[in-house]
Image 1 (cartoon, helix red, strand yellow):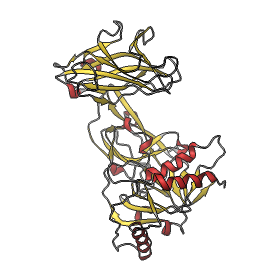
Image 2: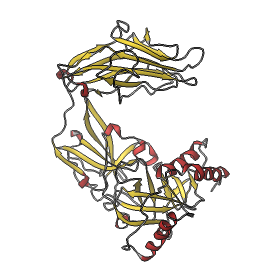
Image 3: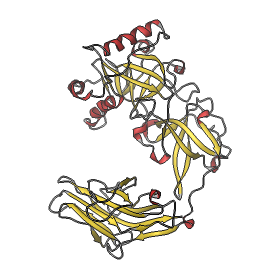
Image 4: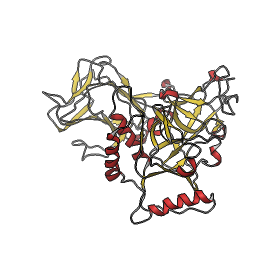
Amino acid sequence: MKTTKLLTLLLAAFVSIAITSCVEDDDYSIPNSLGEEENRLLNEILDDLNSEEPEYEEVSIADLKLLYETYEAGQSGFDYDHFIQIPDNLVVKGYVTSSDATGNFYKEFYMQDSPENPTAAIGVILNQVDSYNQFNVGREVYVKLKDMYLGYNSNEVISIGGMPDEDEVGQFTANQIPTKILRSGTTETMVPLELNLSEINESHVGMLVTSYDVEFPESLSGSTYGDPTQDFDTQRTIQSCEGFGYSNFLLETSSFANFYYTPLPTQNGGTITAVVLKSFGGDNLVLLLNNTNDVDFESDRCTPLDINDFTVVFEDGFDNNLNNWSTYNVTGAQIWGTTNFGNPAPSAYMNGYSSGAQENEDWLISNAIDLSGVTNTFFFFETDKRYDGNDLEVYMSTDYSGGDPNTSGTWTMLDATMDPNANSWNTWTNSGNVDVSAADGQMLYIAFKYTSTSSAAATFELDNVTVLGL
């Protein structure tokens, strides 16, 4: 195993300045319902954390992961250990999100930093089967980290373990578990994080989430959770209606799960509650079920929107320059204009570069769009980004009266997809359907806010802005 002096320095700095999220006002108490030795060890830690000069430091899951991510970011090439050893008396607390009761998880569990509205989650690898009897879903768990290991498991999920396993984190041994992984007497009711399938991303790995209006594709009718021709895990597509099509995600089932040969409920749709993880090797985000009771498909299957049912309220391909828009320059000499490029040409254009990157804040604001006769309004657009720099921000208002948008009107920031390919030209990206139905029956203003700095100024082309309503 390789060692690194960098880690010691990193940890020293981390402990001195980064452990600002340590819990200061928790009630460190525990019922006497657990084993005598387990009670004693955990009570010692809780008493110490409440003392005036504690020996232990409680670190948040988020900061613990940041510690490893900082180490990983400092490495290069391929020949390095994907773990670090923790030399200090750190303790991390979490609430269990996974269960191996059905065999879909094996010698691991995952925990998040709060039973509700979590911000971070992490894995724990242990040489123990049927751990659900001890580390049940919702159980509050403390892990003593001194001399333990932190890094990637085989799925490239940041996890805690008791030893190295080649270049990855290995399991807590059976002898380490009783003294290093300590459950409290508290089991919280877990409130899954509610996310659309399209909203699930890597920040949610290890968390318990619920998605609504989900279904299996009809093409999977007659299939089971597991593919009987496969030796290992099976991935099945799940989908949800989003706009005029579907958002897709992967549901992964272990070949050891006791529901591997259970038929998929393809006739209906509904909600699914599962843990966000990665497939083997970390290639894809997947959902893993704790049990099939978390698949509640009692609703009708969803139907994507039909664009033929909608009325075009506003559309602009910028053929008439910026006649349907106003511009407002807050900072910088550059302003919005049009260019003879587009999808097709022309398009709106903004670039904060002039003999070097310049500081800019420039708004492109639509004229009033009358939504008095429509409902369920949304819009979409396309962008092409070049060079590194801030993404466009998109806003809506119903009370803009002209002038500086920082002081005129109430603006709501909207969620939209921008072109992610800053190093490739002519890679037009659709924004997805952006919901502006809060403005139904009113006058709508849409704004695109461009910002750049003295060190990074992206070029953005904007085209095909379309507002639809029923």
